[in-house]
Image (cartoon, rainbow, N blue to C red; front, side, top):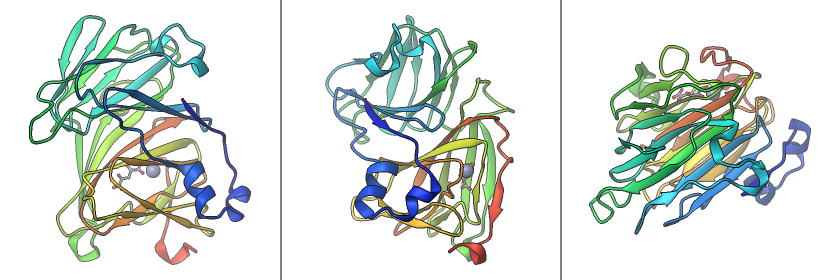
Length: 279
Ligand SMILES: O=C(O)C(=O)C[C@H](O)C(=O)CO
Ligand SMILES: [Zn+2]
């Protein structure tokens, strides 16, 4: 498990490109037949990537968690961003195809992730887990690729027309902390999350997906009056501490999985920062 210690806004002012990327960008989370993990000490969020390319992969626990099994004190949202697949939780198998989500509650013991058509056109399944500490156990719940609460946002005239699906949230699948969903940019729209915002009560992670190999997303981070940027490729994630804006523009249309944990689960508890205020 890769550990990322907490950062402060003052610290960001002095970071060069290499340090910004080392602290906030998560690369190489997805590797064949492995469960790779990163923990940020911001809200103790753990990210795991699993690509069951040639065999099913059992989710291990990690030494840093000091727990007998991964879900002993945690919950997670799992989304598949690859080809068709299944997730088996304590013997019950769920079909989790591309764009589907599975919420796994505290107490689950054996979690096995598998591809259904590893050599198909979408390749093997690619599971992304966003996990946070949990105080109680909510039921494991599957949401299909079109499920959740859909919000249409933005405008083609400002290049930010996008469809946002809230899946694990106050009005949907219950959880202790995790709030999670996916946003898909419409063809020709490149800007996400504009106007940008912060939410001082939650850490958020964006995982960018469906970014063409020759494209990048220019992701803005940092305090609104002191922004920095990262050039982000497909299946890379960016950690946004509570004080950081998170917004980006692609050189092609793309999608992203957003997920949060922290003090509350109120999606609309955010402070907007107009582009004219960003520096
Ligand atoms: O397109 C958007 O806008 C988003 O997807 C915003 C994220 O959901 C978010 O940042 C929630 O806090
Ligand atoms: Zn946000």
